[in-house]
Image 1 (cartoon, rainbow, N blue to C red):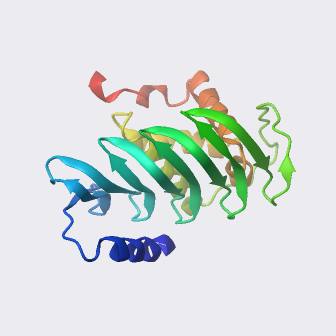
Image 2: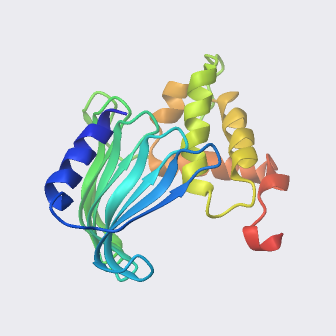
Length: 222
């Protein structure tokens, strides 16, 4: 949890001398799921607060400021192993300003800017930092797949659960199915280095081919 010390220090310096209300929700395994630090308003009706969301392994998923229910300012997102995944600027709930995304090795994957929620410009880089042309979303499964370790599968499932939890009635089972389906078609290195559009396409292909469709049920369908 390498980022936790840094985040804790920032919050201590920022909020240490104030009596901020903290609301905490937990995952079924007892680890923190979400935490808010109220800057303005009350615990029941916070107007401005810092939100910290966690993966179910205890690592931070995302953190940033919320004003009147909408993201504001700089937000940080992390991989489930604690490494920085992306940083984005928000204005009144919409992406607005500079952004960066990172590979798991810390190299910048993409950087650019948004204006009022619309992508204005972007530069793309390969896993060693060389700028690359933004090619079409062509995904070709490798003929020789290096098996993922159980730890790698678990980390990817953990990341999937954090992003899908609000959309599906049984995200753990859905993510378990999806990640294991992807693992038999792509090596972890290849999958981890796909662009966001290519990653989305990989998931769409799983769904189109009827992988895990029984588990893709909206919460309100129960």
